[in-house]
Image (cartoon, rainbow, N blue to C red):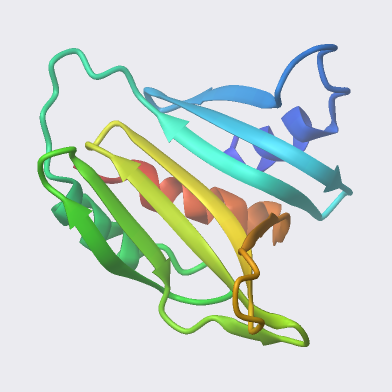
Length: 156
């Protein structure tokens, strides 16, 4: 079964009472999804986290981040690597150019922890001074979601 069809099937299942989302194994990774809504073609997600057991694995989040920026094309905006904290092994990717919205800008953010975990979220920033950004759900087709997960998990 393709990843796209696995996602469609798993997200169609009713959520487990008390769970924070949906988890499915994929190619040595665990994919955790927090859906907001779904239909036959697409879903709206609060976040997607892919994680694999570290088992002593040490990797370069900078290199992984650059690879993700090249491989992931299914989001509304291309990603760019904006920050790396080598000491903490954390890298931050954001939309290269946010999408303008009436009240501000919408953008994706991907946070990498080493080369073992990545979390994708969408945020809305505001023009008003002092108004903090807020996390918003993002809509994605199952095909684009499979491409996103495949692009992230193809990493180092």
